[in-house]
Length: 148
Ligand SMILES: [Zn+2]
Image (cartoon, rainbow, N blue to C red; front, side):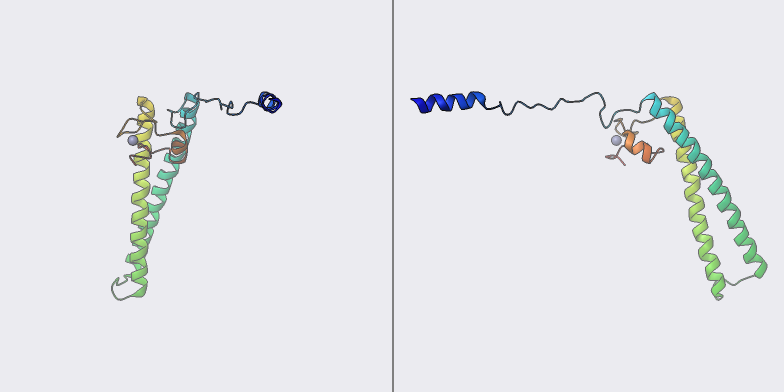
């Protein structure tokens, strides 16, 4: 039975396999509520974005008035003058951008209200954490990826 003992010895010398267990790091989940440091950073981001959007809205409003003013000065006929068509298109575009900028200002304001209320970072629909990655990319988001 020399073969058996040799085999048994090999088994003993062979390093135990399957014993590798990866330690589970549960200290920081991907979708946890933002920490105090995260919140401070996100607040700065929101304040910056709010200022930028208000500036944009004001600039768009000014250029809208400039276009309307210019159109009135030359008294263009939107339907027959090709120049008039361009002005109508620009006007529509600026109106859309202006509306978007105002909507941004509003949603950022809402996010700041939530920061003050201590509800920022939780989904408004399901109450689950929105996740720091999403908040960093879209600081004004009030819904998690599933509810967005
Ligand atoms: Zn949700």
